[in-house]
Amino acid sequence: MDDAGGYHREVLGQDPRETPAYFRALEDLGTAFISVHFWPVNDAGQDNSTMTRRRLEAIDRAMREHRIQYSLNVELSNWVPRFEITPGVNEFEHPGGIHRWDLRMEWLSAVLPPVRLAPPALVAVTYDECEHMILSDNRFANAPKSTFDRPFLVDTHGMDLTTSYDRLVKEATRIREEHYQNRIALQTEQVWPDLFHIFARAGWIITPKLLKENISSVVLAIAMGAAIQHQDRGTSFWASPDLWNWDRYPGHSPEALRSALLMAYWLGAETIYVENLDNHGWKKRHPEADPDGSLLRWADADHYELTKHGRVVRDFYKQYVPNHPRTVNWRHYRPRVVIIRLPDGGWGQFGPEARLGEPASRNRLLGNREMPLDEPASEWLHVWPVLTHGAARPGAISSGNPQVYPKGIEDFFAPIDSVAVFDHTVTASRLAEVGCIIVCGHALTPETFKAVADCAAAGATCVIARRLYAAHQTGDLPGNWLIVDDFKDPRIAATLAPFLGPPDVARFRFKDQIVEFRKGDKP
Image (cartoon, rainbow, N blue to C red; front, top):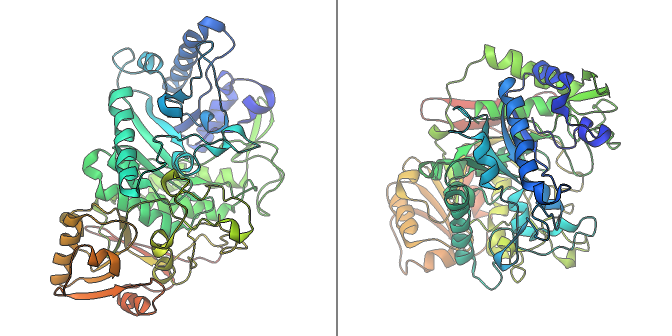
């Protein structure tokens, strides 16, 4: 579970972990993991750091006592421009104008081995929506104005995209290795359906948000591609069904939540948790949601009931999972079709000409204000409608673009047949069993082009942007190549047709098994 907006803290001003009913509720839901939105102490002067450590120690004791694993969610800096723990010093400010909250190791060491017994209850530090902060340069840190403009990892202004990508990977790796000393896993939980590869390559856990404003099969194909490409870097694959849908909460039906849990489970996600536990008092809600609450609806500090959404979660964790053991492992995913591109964050952003205001992510590839969404970054947006039988629409893969999705994304189900997205550095070993390769975007390494050419010579079908082909080859190569100047070219759909599954099936092929999801009676 994710505990953002919790009833006890937000409504009553209490620590929920001091209330026995809170842990009874977690037990009723079958909770084994919580993403704890951590708030440091800043009203004790010179004792702020000591008191923050003690707060964390108390959380850890409670989690260990109830046998619950947890992560510390550092989303606070996404919404706050300045926070002083050491008086006079902004905890969120880093050299070069970078804005981000890295937890102090002096706090974490107090709850990790050898100070506390192994295995630790604390399993990760969660950088919630950090790809959003990269793309938007932390614009929401001074919400509701939302005019903040400081980089999250690297100031990419003035850099080309290849350099920006490499620098972002390097900095994400440095944070894990140097600041956190490889003692705790780092996790990215992402709302936009790109940039997973940066963090997978840096050895972070990657976590797509399902539901939210995403297309289920698309975001999973991107995230799983990043995970399997960079599995030797120490990454892992989690999933978080998120009940927000723009300004509605819960913004998705109980059946959509059930579908998201099942899909994450059968695709091998190692940890699956729902956002969120007990958000209270939100007025704009899905018509099938209870009138208040989230998974829980509290009457007071000690009395609660499970909502419709909560009963779905309880049934999944306490009944379905124990009675349906899985053998699938995400590391054994074997895509049939792959898209290769430099991950630049292009999801379908729009510029001022759309007269829709500024997109939530801003319109900056990899956070560079001089690089709005362009044609190379948009090429894959014209491939997804073919691969999903029209579930994705040309021009965007998120309902964050209301021109493309004026009614939002109304159906959780999206057909697909074993697609993955790899970055522009993918090696030959990851392409060995692929039948169709689509190469687009801003960059492709020479080694990856050679691997693609070898696959084409061995029988794979390859669709490639002419400028990327020409950057590496002047003449014809053996194999089935479709070289295009424009990814709106109708020949692409004809070329991909043999690799499409049925329009009512989302199929994912693994090493020794095939997982299929079929459309039910409800969206």
